[in-house]
Image 1: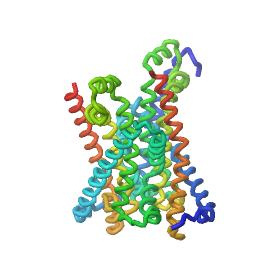
Image 2: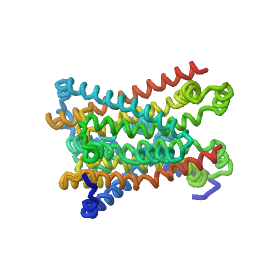
Image 3: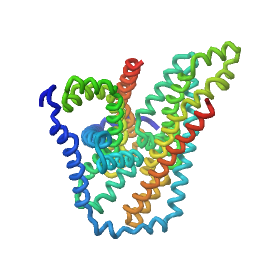
Image 4: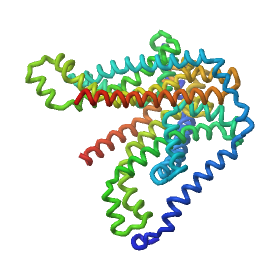
Length: 220
Length: 260
């Protein structure tokens, strides 16, 4: 059996449109996830009573559930019990964003708690108000700690975005499946898609490894 | 807002207490007003009892495919990590790129590639279960090779020197000194990966491999009761996952006390 690369070039426009939708899906989910993560992180660090327990419960629930279960639940179950109707794209986006929000909340929390206690006391001692304390003292130091794990979450989001093909969102993996079903050239198309995912994730993976090394060098 | 000076207590209260509380309340209130309560009242969980045998079989399949593929992945991971120490650069490049490639491809893509594309190249077609097993074993071997490598690096330098000064030959140095200590070090990350693959095995449902999630999707399509089945199966994953992490916590403590 021969590797016929012309199949890939013929269907390139469809694959490229799939890549764009994957990127759009991941970017939207990341933005929503960061907002949710910030709220949940604030809830665990500052909230009391109901707010605290809601945040902790949310993080515990969505870190423990498999991605596939969440996506299928949102697609098959949410329209039955909720009156709001969303398109498959938005269901996929939300189903990707909600668990990543839980992971991001933990990352934010760890980053903030890693800022030495003395920094806080010093900022209070010079009389910074709480807004400037967060903006000028905690955020810059915490952000530096958060960047590698956040890039890790981004790679996980790209990998999980392939799962959304199961609910009919026409992203890269969906395109590849449909095209290989039509042309019966699974070998060429699935290999091409694997290479595309690899090329999307490789730069991020290298960046994460480099950043982690640099952080470790600073710490030691 | 001034940068220094008056603490601004009312701004603090607004920013940290009233705003989050209002936001939480708004989200919770919207969610509850959006729920179709009459439908929720009509949920019928007896479907779980009707299909209990199928669900149990699915759970057994999930556990067996996860544990067997992880065992193979761990063996391969140990082999790759040890081969990284062979002083032959091309072999090292091959292993490093194998690890990087498998880590950077989504599990579903690897699964479909093994199931649909690989038979074109090899001429041997695999069943869905075999494809799922191979995909999980290969991918976990890449992650585990990385973990084992880090574990070997964390074995104190003095242990290597001591083994050398005792005149142990190379196989005994690795089998008796380095690897047992590396194994103790990697138990926590190993447990993390095992937990991750227990959850990730639900991905195999996209190929209808026959594990728990596949069974759940089949039942929900057949009985038109997605909420009951998917919620129950989600709860099973959640409870078993937390049970596993509690278990590894206990095992870790056990190892720590015997080590000291």
